[in-house]
Image (cartoon, rainbow, N blue to C red; front, side, top):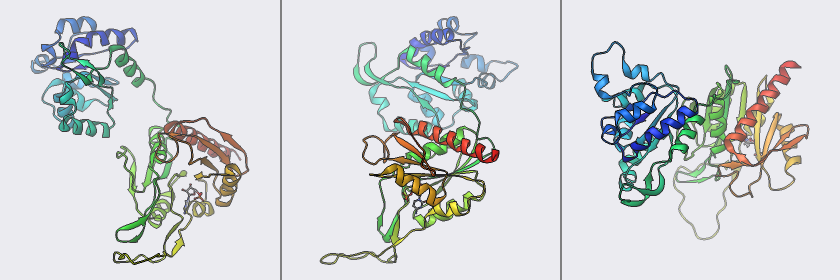
Length: 397
Ligand code: C5P
């Protein structure tokens, strides 16, 4: 636990006690600024051993204190100040807290506490965004009164000690099984853009969230992952190969290439069925009256993969407004996919753009399972479980 220079540092001993009650062994680092708010004595009384301070770090000693402390399974920064966020977001290592953070391998949880105006400052926002992009976790700050004289209400108040302790315990839970170790998973995500002329295109509102969830879950389960994605507005995932494409023809080339070595291919992308028969080189001027565009079909990538399936597990998605299960089963059979996840465009908060999804698993033989509405990440987990079952079945046959 790193304690930062914030008024909320006084709550650190209380977080420490709760963590120790939860069976966690905690080593504490207090920054120079933190020691202006909370005493070394009260921290060391609640912790397992002496408090790591800059004074200790800079005094002659046989070990490299920051490296010893960085062997922790997780780091939590309580009373995280704007200064600590800035230092970490820029790789600074000029005090014990920052040097330790640079070396920590496990998850990092920031629990910020600072004045409203500071938290809303653009520089702080940019640093937080950067750390999030690198996979750091954040808890709060909450809306509420902060400061000793209740200087203001608004965002800025640190999360409560029991909430912080619960979040740390969650981070320390055993990680996902590495049941995809050694496998190559290819995932397509997002929409495609079919340009008509240099400035106009046909597309759809796919957010890419479902495909990103599949890619990230596969990565966390040990797979090598290639994520082929159309234009989406999502943070760059770490630890996987990302290939960015525009049109369906580019998606096809990238997916077919990656699929050569793939064990599982998941086609989540909302591929445009048609493209302009002729791509105009110049912007088309407006004319009086109606215009028509001649469209030609795009290749069906999933069907093409199905024709040359090898040992791969092939998974598709489908969106239907009616006769979903029959149509999805027919589609799976026609494209030689192992199964299709069917979703419905009409439910609020699911499918296009939402964080949840409610799908029906449909196999080519017409059998199906309705899955409950849940997060896209949980749908991804179940999808990959089913893909592994199909793979095991195939090997057994
Ligand atoms: O036929 P339909 O578009 O409903 O099929 C959906 C599934 O097929 C999705 O998995 C989608 O990614 C894939 N697909 C494809 N190539 C296309 C159209 C759809 O791979 N041209």
